[in-house]
Length: 564
Image 1: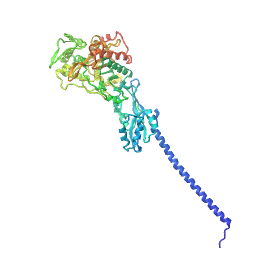
Image 2: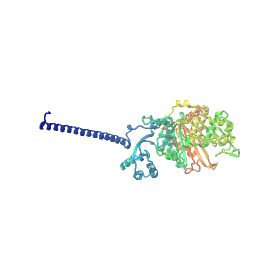
Image 3: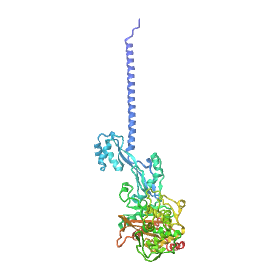
Image 4: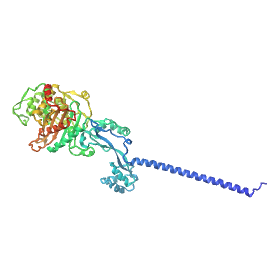
């Protein structure tokens, strides 16, 4: 028989059960609350994470230490920046997140009115994960688009190439495409040296690349471009160009071709007549070629400075008549043939040398083969497939062979620096380094004779307007008739002046070309002596001190005569 419970005992048992149940309920509630907090904490953490990621995407341009350059800077020889990377952002869309493309286009048009609505609409309707809408925005455009609060669009940081000098050295520096890849000039050359491979491997963003220093002197480059622009305007020419070349090293200190373009606006490079005439254009260089013909004749040993040639009557050959522009109608010595720029006398010297030797000499001095240099825009010269006597005669005074002006300057340097042909370079090169790539192409004695003749031509011949007191300029004019409708026209000219200074020991070669000049005010003709020569004078006068050439009075001509 069990022992009966008292009423108080039953109450205690019931009360204990209630307390136990209450504790369990509270524990469950606490656990649920903790679980909810954990879930929300995870969500909050992910939101913060995504928030920072979005900020990284849409934030304005980062500080310099946060984003490394993807291309090396290009510098001139003195450390002045020619090209550098700047940070920018580009606008993209995620079409699968956009419900109303028309609304997005309408909103973007308030900031980017030139946006092509049809193209953008097609991109937004593609349901792809990613579409570029506009590359390389300005900070102001980015800020205004951000204020619109358009869902499904964002920004990605990118690089944009910036050229502080604008068009000053555009044909040398070149430019890049929208993806920051070099497509012209030294920008393309740099890519060809391995930068493009690094970019494909994704390495250029992770390391700072050393700047690339060029041989160009930005100060001289500015002077050259400024004087060419003035000459184009003064002589109403369709184009002009010039190069300043170190005769001892082959370094290009300055080179300009007008009309040019602004590499910050690379689409301009595709406009008509914007090509680099100095290395990518070939021209019949006219009477400047008489310098090479004279050097050839003297170097062959078949002609001496004391020889004379009959220039009394024109030469008639193959239905053509070869005459002189300002004929003396008498027998001329070799120096007279040079300073009077006699076509007849020059042709007779070439005839003494012969066709094969003439072609071999012009090839040896670098005028008939493709020039080797870093600049990608280089054109191969043109010449007759078969050299006949008529070709030999016309080529002797600059008609029948078309070569690039930079190539002409290179060969002139070889003719005047003692006979060493040195390939031109747009990178720094010392004289010792130049000796390792130089080739002896003419005798030093021939070079000394040509220095004498070039100086004589500036003192007494067609190059008088190139004289710069104290710097002893030597040079040769070239006035070539251009081909119009298949025939040479006496009214349309391509002018050039080929010079060097100081001529007794040439440090620099300066070549100026002016395409289709008109007579200047107060002048009746437009020969090279009246326009190209004065332009050379202006360039030398303004740049000689910057190039480190000190003026000297009364000593140079005596030294020149002694050396010859």
